[in-house]
Length: 288
Image 1 (cartoon, helix red, strand yellow):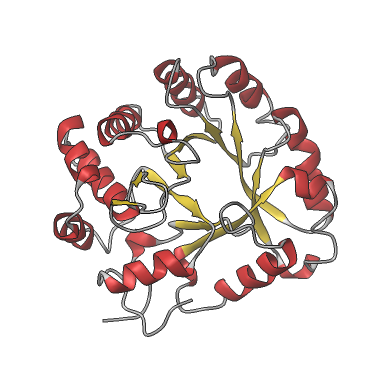
Image 2 (cartoon, helix red, strand yellow):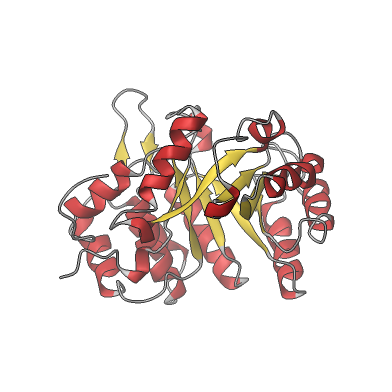
């Protein structure tokens, strides 16, 4: 069996080293990401995610060489209207922005105004893939409809959802997340996830008491949804704490392209890689 990452896991984990709880210093994160991209597990790793606030402060300047073709994902933490300027600053440093991710509303707010603002910027952002982070509350389905319509019209847009945080209500239940996955499937709408996916299998954090979704659970659940499973069956896979069922489902599709779920950001690359090796889904001889 090759030590190459299976096709199903290509680009699954974006490098969110500078975000909590990792909070790596930007120079360290840039150097570490370079190292990740030059290893046997490089196919597992997506772009380094950088907040627009750091770019606006010029924090990346001098850390990359225009000749190396450094690729990042831009996170809109300073407002949607600031995204074009941040992207232009990165372009001036020879850095390619592969994707832009921005929240369109706070929890409980109507997402439509922010989503409309983000979609109107699509042309100015030069065809970069846009992820609209939509709260799993009021107005969710209408926002998904609007995203799907924009995507069908040719805009490079997709959805993003939060699956964790510093409060219990930021962790969707298996049924809630299953409903969102099935809603995206029904609209042929790709999605990303962020926060809380610290381990492969669903588990309870003994320090916080929060129960976290497992990223292999999400992968298995998404495969099942694409295969025709409805919300109840998808929720069962998300809720599973015994890894056997989700691992077998994932292993059966290891040579196929991953459907629907684009991936997620993790402040650690070594932790998901170690979990995947431990579960036999990646065959590697050492950790990151």
